[in-house]
Image (cartoon, rainbow, N blue to C red; front, side, top):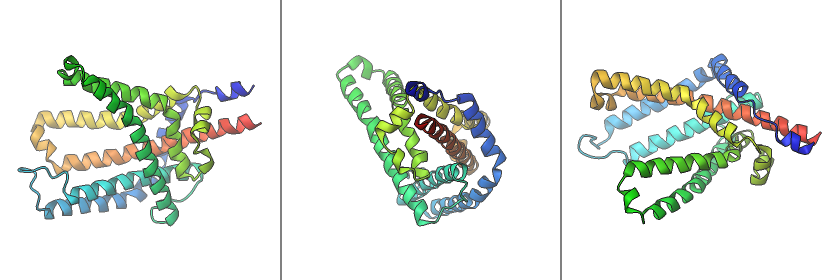
Length: 264
């Protein structure tokens, strides 16, 4: 009987439906987030205009202005995910300033770094092993394809670990056990991973289609340096983060339900 409970399948279609519907029906959350986004955009524009770095003659990606605003956007997106999870699971109000919020952000960043390192190490070994093969290295496209393929396989294998992000958001510290996460998500690795990918697909496709249309009309260089296209990318990324936060919250709720059933 215990095995039956642990093999409960995540209803992927229903989960994705609830994910998108929640974001759509709660547009007031995005309206609350909008002032912070506008403030970051203004800061980005001001820093770019006052920067002594010239993109035409040098790489500005390592300038302190660029690094600072990039970190600010990372924290902003993490904050959105945390707030969506807390709003859906705990019915909390949005909060971007409390000490409790910043504690969650810190743990979220540390968990992301740890997971990133964990996923990167096997890729480094793969590249090192392939370095012995001149044929493979002569074809960069094949090497990149192999790396992406390995990352996909890795992400599916460690899919239960993605559940630690909503757990951190709602401060469910008891769930932050690798053994417990893998037991809880047993048999659902593919559903969790592909669901996360499917949740990001609409925004990704929208941006790709917009880019293709604008590139064909104005040319690659013009669009690449366009403030309007950058703003579009920022807005789409923010919406995508809202969807990701909603997805995390809904899979967390499902697996907590599974855990409660196991205890009955």
